[in-house]
Amino acid sequence: MEQNVYLLLDSAERAIARGQVKGKPAGQLWQIEVEDGKVDEVLKQKTVKLLSMMDAGPSYEGTIVRSRNDMIQLEVTRLEEDAGDMRKNLRVLVGFKSLIYPLSGTWKGRRPVVSRDLSCGGVAFFTDHSLRVGEQLEMVIPVTSQPLVVGCQVLRIRPEQASVPLLYAAKFINMCHDEEILLREAVFNLQLRGRAKPAERYA
Image 1 (cartoon, helix red, strand yellow):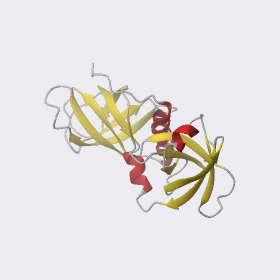
Image 2 (cartoon, one colour):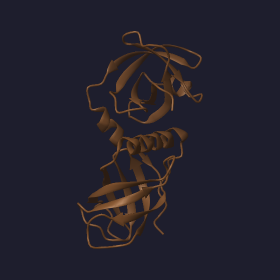
Image 3 (cartoon, helix red, strand yellow):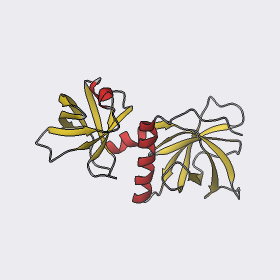
Image 4 (cartoon, one colour):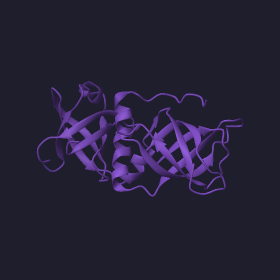
């Protein structure tokens, strides 16, 4: 992936476009080329947030100063909130079938699951297999550029789910840097390509 590429978010922190910084930023003024013909979507916004697609660096907020073709000039300020939290909270509804394997608990083998949503920090999924809060497992993530097997820890069981299959929320644990990059790219690209969809019911 190119250097200095940012995900552009609207005020509700929804992904609207991808942009590449051109040249060396002159203080608070950045020149960004908006990719994939989405400059009109960006220009509808008063301000946009910029989240690096390359690393875990700081996030920014920019006010559009002027534009020409696919190039926009932004007056940019660094955001004080933790960019890592923003990445983890950027969640995409996506339904994929997968498998989980135990790292703790008493069960063995593998169990089928269907995802409900995915973020850089965790995943929500349906399964008819009973899991406990705090239990650790491995899950295959098939929507990255190459499938990942990542560690997860169950955080909660959604209270509104009173019947099988249950909906579980889990956070990712013990991920290496390369795994974080692949996952971040997948979440961002799913947002931008409009491929996000409600999860299929578990089968």
